[in-house]
Image (cartoon, rainbow, N blue to C red; front, side, top):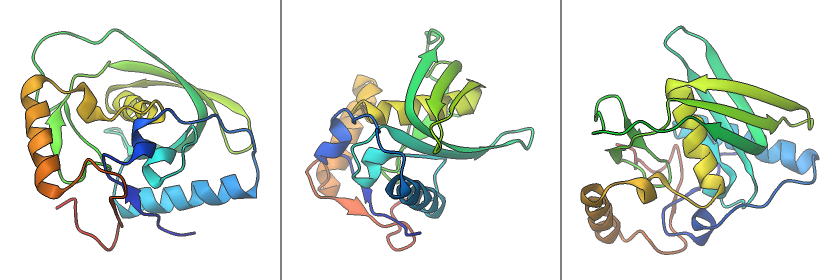
Length: 188
């Protein structure tokens, strides 16, 4: 297993739809193991293939909910259904979101409160998870990555201007930028 570099916003792989996985082989198992190690080292609660430069439809997730239940797995070729998103102002305390591909920053973003994830595991076996709250948010965030959408693409005008300033200041927004969990301290 190895920690992989995480691509930063601007890399083309992050802004393009990912391709379905067709081969369930040792290469895929190795990639998933590396993605878990990378996600844990970052640390993050989810990591999509495009974030490590792999334009394939898969993501890992790992999170412990408020009841102490551990949610950890891989979703391959996922489908996601969500409930309508509530309207109104964003609660910055409860709806603040970050991204390993735009490290060190968080912005308020309204997401659907419930989601149904349907995918297959490493053995190609189908599964379904009905998620609420933060787990639903994780699934929506990672699923967006597979469609070439970053959470910053969903922000309002004010926060989008702040993202643009940060991007310019840090030299992001261009191909080739990445950071290495455990080496670079970009989350601080």
